[in-house]
Length: 284
Length: 166
Image (tube, rainbow over all chains, first blue to last red):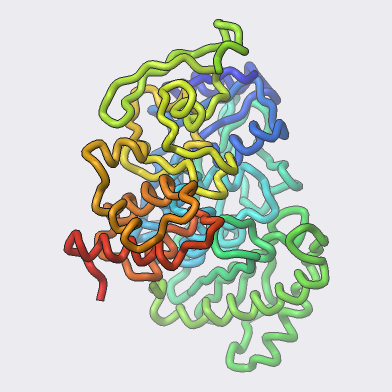
C-alpha cells in the first residue's frame, strides 16, 4: 500500500522524491494516477501531493515573452484564462476536450505531459507552440524542449527523483494562428483516436503536432511557406509530411483508419489555423 | 471497511461534509468516494465506474465539481465537501423538482451525480444555452438515456432561477 505525503516546501518534495526513487509518484489532479492505482497498473510506495507546496512556480505567470505554467494549473483554469485564449487557441481547444468539466477541475496541464501518453490531448498544441519544460531535482534544474521530453509511451525525460516544475510557452509570432482538431469515438470522456494541432504563421509556414499516431506525440513542419489558397498543393504536402506518423491498430481504430483520418484532420487544422491569423481570436 | 487494514496503515483526516466537521481514519489509497459512503455514511454519492468515466460520484470539493472516485480521501484534510445530501438538506431543491417534473429520473442511479453536476453548471453559468448544458453535463452518463429530459430539467431550473436562455 502506498504512503501519502503532502510536503509544504519544494525542497521537502524533492527530498521525498529522491528518497523513494522509482517508487515515488508526484500527484496533482490524480485523474490518471487514481485509475492506475485502482487497476494496479501503478503501485507506488509513496504518493507526493504537490498541492500543498508553497514555493513551486505559480499556476500561471504572463510575461512579455509568453506564459509560464506551474505544476498545479488545472485544465479548467488554463482554458478559462483570457490571454491563453487569445495567444494559444489550439491549446484551449485541446484542454476543453480533456475528460469532462469535473475531470478538468482536477487534471493538470503539467501532469498531462508527465503521464507520457502518445494520445495526450494537450501535447500536440504544446509542441507546435515550442513549449519548453523545466525539470528540478536535488541537483538543480535543467530545461529541454518538449519535443525531446517525450521518449516513449509512459516514458519522459523526467526520471526518478525529478519533478517538472514549469512549462514555458513562447508568445506566438505576430500574425500567426493555431487550431486543434481531434477524432474520438464519443464526445467527452474518451481518449483521442487521432489529434492534430497546427500553427500557421503570416508567411504560410506550417507547424504540426500529431497525437495518437506514434509511440510519442510528434512535431513536424511542412517544408517552406505554403500557398494556402492552393488546396491540392497543401494536400500533397501534407500527404508527404504525414509519412512521419506510424500509427498502430488498437481498440479505438485500425492503423489504416488513423492514417486516413490524420490527413483529413491535419488539413482542417491547418485551414482553421490559417483563418485565425487575421482575427487571432478563438471562435467561441 | 477499515478492519482489513492494520491500524498503522490508517491516516486520520478531518474534513467538512455538508457543513459538518467529520473525522475519518482511512488507508492512503482509499478514495473520497469510498470515504463518503463507507466512513461518513452518506450513500447518495454513487459508486459506478470508479475511474472518472461516468460521473455518478460527482461531488463539490471546495465548491468545484469533481469525481469523488478520482480524489484521495487523505488529500481532503481541512477541505469542504458537498454531496447530493448536502444540496437537499431542506427538502428537494428546485433543480431536483424539475428533474421529477421533466420525467428525467428513470432508473435513478445516475441522478445524484447529474444533480450535483447540474447544480455546479448553474452556479457557474446561470443562463446556459442547450449546447452549454450538454457540454457541462457530458461527464455524466445515463444508461437509461434520459438525456433529453435531463437537459429540459436544467433549462427549467435556469428559468425558475431567473436565468433562462433565449
